[in-house]
Image (tube, rainbow, N blue to C red; front, side, top):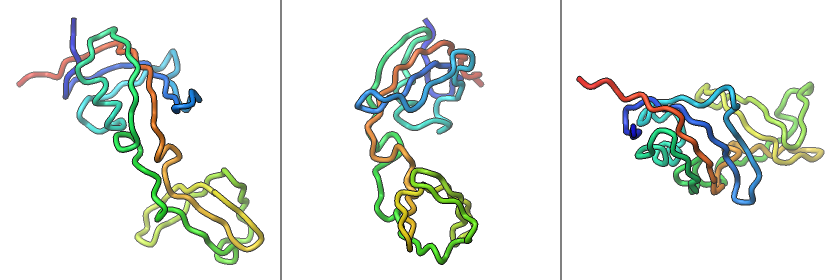
Length: 147
Protein backbone atom coordinates (compact mmCIF):
# COMPACT_ATOMS: atom_id res chain seq x y z
CA UNK A 1 0.00 0.00 0.00
CA UNK A 2 1.26 3.47 -0.89
CA UNK A 3 1.08 6.02 1.94
CA UNK A 4 0.74 9.77 1.36
CA UNK A 5 3.50 11.84 2.95
CA UNK A 6 4.76 15.43 2.79
CA UNK A 7 6.04 16.26 -0.70
CA UNK A 8 3.89 13.64 -2.43
CA UNK A 9 1.38 14.60 -5.12
CA UNK A 10 -2.06 13.27 -4.25
CA UNK A 11 -5.32 13.00 -6.17
CA UNK A 12 -8.50 12.98 -4.08
CA UNK A 13 -12.25 13.15 -4.31
CA UNK A 14 -13.93 15.02 -1.49
CA UNK A 15 -17.20 16.43 -0.25
CA UNK A 16 -17.09 19.33 2.20
CA UNK A 17 -20.01 19.86 4.57
CA UNK A 18 -20.89 22.20 7.40
CA UNK A 19 -21.71 20.67 10.80
CA UNK A 20 -25.42 20.83 9.93
CA UNK A 21 -24.82 18.63 6.87
CA UNK A 22 -25.11 21.30 4.16
CA UNK A 23 -22.62 20.66 1.34
CA UNK A 24 -20.48 23.70 0.51
CA UNK A 25 -18.04 22.09 -1.94
CA UNK A 26 -17.26 18.82 -3.68
CA UNK A 27 -14.86 17.62 -6.34
CA UNK A 28 -16.60 16.86 -9.65
CA UNK A 29 -16.58 13.12 -10.38
CA UNK A 30 -14.60 13.70 -13.60
CA UNK A 31 -12.19 16.21 -12.04
CA UNK A 32 -10.66 15.12 -8.74
CA UNK A 33 -8.47 17.52 -6.76
CA UNK A 34 -4.71 17.15 -7.21
CA UNK A 35 -2.13 18.86 -5.00
CA UNK A 36 1.25 18.46 -3.31
CA UNK A 37 1.19 17.79 0.44
CA UNK A 38 3.14 20.47 2.28
CA UNK A 39 2.82 23.24 -0.34
CA UNK A 40 -0.16 24.95 1.37
CA UNK A 41 -2.35 24.55 -1.72
CA UNK A 42 -5.36 23.56 0.43
CA UNK A 43 -6.45 24.42 3.98
CA UNK A 44 -4.09 23.04 6.65
CA UNK A 45 -6.59 20.63 8.23
CA UNK A 46 -7.38 19.04 4.86
CA UNK A 47 -3.69 18.56 4.11
CA UNK A 48 -3.06 17.10 7.58
CA UNK A 49 -5.98 14.68 7.16
CA UNK A 50 -4.55 13.28 3.93
CA UNK A 51 -0.95 12.94 5.13
CA UNK A 52 -0.68 9.39 6.43
CA UNK A 53 -3.63 8.05 4.42
CA UNK A 54 -3.10 5.13 2.07
CA UNK A 55 -4.01 5.06 -1.60
CA UNK A 56 -7.71 4.12 -2.04
CA UNK A 57 -8.43 4.80 1.64
CA UNK A 58 -11.59 6.73 2.54
CA UNK A 59 -12.28 8.69 5.70
CA UNK A 60 -14.35 11.46 7.21
CA UNK A 61 -12.61 14.23 9.16
CA UNK A 62 -13.79 17.21 11.19
CA UNK A 63 -11.71 20.35 10.74
CA UNK A 64 -12.01 23.25 13.22
CA UNK A 65 -11.88 26.88 12.05
CA UNK A 66 -8.25 27.26 13.20
CA UNK A 67 -7.20 24.63 10.64
CA UNK A 68 -9.57 25.88 7.93
CA UNK A 69 -10.44 29.52 7.22
CA UNK A 70 -9.86 30.90 10.71
CA UNK A 71 -12.29 32.57 13.10
CA UNK A 72 -14.74 35.28 12.05
CA UNK A 73 -13.03 38.60 12.70
CA UNK A 74 -15.16 41.65 13.52
CA UNK A 75 -12.34 43.89 12.27
CA UNK A 76 -13.12 42.71 8.71
CA UNK A 77 -16.72 43.94 8.90
CA UNK A 78 -17.23 47.60 8.04
CA UNK A 79 -20.18 49.91 7.53
CA UNK A 80 -19.64 52.24 4.56
CA UNK A 81 -21.78 55.26 3.59
CA UNK A 82 -23.48 54.66 0.22
CA UNK A 83 -22.41 58.20 -0.73
CA UNK A 84 -18.79 56.94 -0.76
CA UNK A 85 -19.59 54.36 -3.47
CA UNK A 86 -20.24 54.81 -7.21
CA UNK A 87 -23.91 55.58 -7.99
CA UNK A 88 -24.18 52.83 -10.63
CA UNK A 89 -23.02 50.06 -8.26
CA UNK A 90 -25.61 47.27 -7.98
CA UNK A 91 -25.67 46.03 -4.37
CA UNK A 92 -27.65 43.08 -3.01
CA UNK A 93 -27.36 41.47 0.41
CA UNK A 94 -25.38 38.26 -0.01
CA UNK A 95 -23.73 39.54 -3.17
CA UNK A 96 -20.01 40.05 -3.57
CA UNK A 97 -18.04 43.15 -4.40
CA UNK A 98 -14.40 43.63 -5.35
CA UNK A 99 -12.78 46.55 -3.55
CA UNK A 100 -9.29 48.01 -3.55
CA UNK A 101 -7.62 48.25 -0.15
CA UNK A 102 -5.50 51.25 0.85
CA UNK A 103 -2.35 49.28 0.01
CA UNK A 104 -3.67 48.57 -3.51
CA UNK A 105 -4.62 44.92 -2.93
CA UNK A 106 -7.89 43.74 -4.50
CA UNK A 107 -10.26 42.19 -1.95
CA UNK A 108 -13.51 40.30 -2.41
CA UNK A 109 -16.09 41.26 0.23
CA UNK A 110 -19.67 40.19 0.85
CA UNK A 111 -22.54 42.64 1.17
CA UNK A 112 -23.79 41.70 4.65
CA UNK A 113 -26.33 44.49 5.10
CA UNK A 114 -27.87 47.37 3.21
CA UNK A 115 -30.12 50.29 4.11
CA UNK A 116 -30.91 53.74 2.69
CA UNK A 117 -27.62 55.30 3.79
CA UNK A 118 -25.06 52.54 4.40
CA UNK A 119 -23.82 49.17 3.22
CA UNK A 120 -22.19 46.66 5.58
CA UNK A 121 -19.25 44.88 3.95
CA UNK A 122 -17.81 41.64 5.35
CA UNK A 123 -14.25 40.76 4.35
CA UNK A 124 -14.21 37.44 6.22
CA UNK A 125 -13.97 34.26 4.16
CA UNK A 126 -17.54 32.88 3.81
CA UNK A 127 -16.48 29.78 5.79
CA UNK A 128 -14.57 31.65 8.52
CA UNK A 129 -15.63 30.49 11.98
CA UNK A 130 -17.19 27.30 10.64
CA UNK A 131 -16.41 23.74 11.72
CA UNK A 132 -16.04 21.76 8.50
CA UNK A 133 -16.51 18.05 7.78
CA UNK A 134 -14.86 16.40 4.79
CA UNK A 135 -15.47 12.98 3.26
CA UNK A 136 -12.19 12.14 1.53
CA UNK A 137 -11.26 9.35 -0.89
CA UNK A 138 -7.55 9.17 -1.72
CA UNK A 139 -7.39 8.00 -5.32
CA UNK A 140 -3.69 8.20 -6.10
CA UNK A 141 -0.35 8.93 -4.46
CA UNK A 142 2.67 9.92 -6.54
CA UNK A 143 5.72 9.69 -4.31
CA UNK A 144 8.03 12.70 -4.30
CA UNK A 145 11.29 12.19 -6.17
CA UNK A 146 14.10 11.33 -3.78
CA UNK A 147 17.46 13.00 -4.21
